[in-house]
Image 1 (spheres, rainbow, N blue to C red):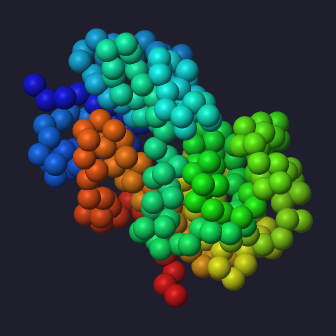
Image 2 (cartoon, rainbow, N blue to C red):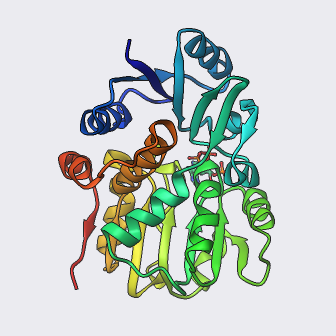
Image 3 (spheres, helix red, strand yellow):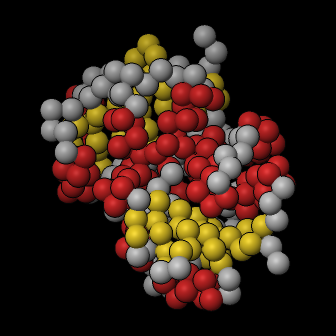
Length: 280
Ligand code: ATR
């Protein structure tokens, strides 16, 4: 019987993860079945257990379940433990092991696919939920410069900055003060606001000569922020499709021991991209 995998979250029906992992499986000659399971905070634990009972050996976890996934696991990787959020679960004899491949997936997409040099980039993250927590440590490790974090609920930006533990480099600020921050080289939308419809547009004063605007979402959810990036002449406008493929490849490696070639799969899916890369 083929090995069973799934992605959990809500809404999940439009997830591209089943397609991505099936393509990786074909590429690696691994017989696997990967499905999407709709689950919210109230029923995730029960559905994950039912999935394990039915032979499930690995899972991805997305909105809004990433913190819960880290909590439900019996063991966690260093990076999942540090930030308390997981996007990948692997079944072990004792229960689930949690990991987080979002950060490495984002950094790989930006540096390998889009050829961005992240070093010393003055960076703004909008949002302080599970998505932001997953990517912030990897960005710091990749050598970005100062990191500013703003969030609708300011306490969560404070909490994220505290968790990162680099007070001279990481600053939590009020979203309402964003017009006073000056220019950034990297602006990341890590909110789920566009999925609900309303992220107030950011001021043009944030955009400088080489600003890259990056949305962690892809497809329709990324359209408003990508439109803002183009309207304000950001040098690069990159949506989350490449990150999705790269984080999936890292999850695949954790489960199967092989890292697939992501370029062919990214190219096949690029009709789902709302992003554009401005050439030099
Ligand atoms: P995720 O795992 O995608 O980060 P999350 O933990 O629910 O999901 O976080 C969603 C993020 O989007 C949060 O930063 C949230 O702000 P709050 O912490 O104030 O809830 C942000 N967000 C969601 N809807 C928003 C909106 N309409 N305007 C601004 N921010 C919004």
